[in-house]
Image (cartoon, rainbow, N blue to C red; front, side):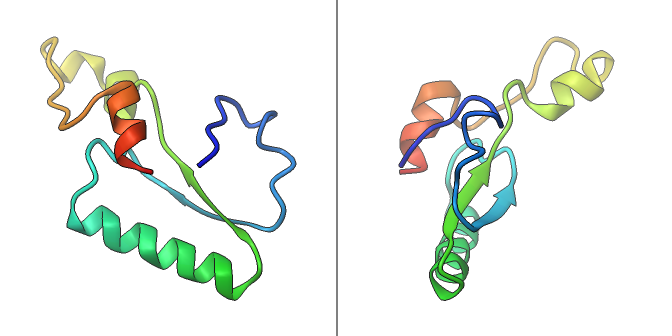
Length: 84
């Protein structure tokens, strides 16, 4: 797995097949999405790409509704390891 921190770094990905999400802990639903992503990428001769967000979109769009608290299953670097 390669990790890019900007779209500019990832610009050279050939034939990307993309999904997005927060993926704050990889549970069975996320695993299903990731298997399908890999399958579609293989079927189309592309590379699977997962775009995730930091900080969490809710923290950016609705900070006033969080009361200083946003429950995440897994955070940061630990989350990246769970996606491998």
